[in-house]
Length: 75
Image (tube, rainbow, N blue to C red; front, side, top):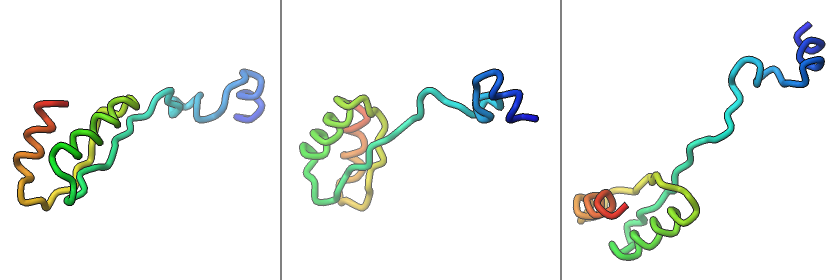
């Protein structure tokens, strides 16, 4: 019955049930430990130019606290 009703309404089942989303959130993965702080910032700016404003940052660098603080201040 769902098939007939929804075909008549011209919508899919997932739309009818409210699961359809027009936008999904994405994030960029960055922060290679070999990157300098400037290279890390360049990569994050490149993501922002593509409308990606969240980052998953690799940690384990000897200067993690400064790298994270700087990203939060500049992004």
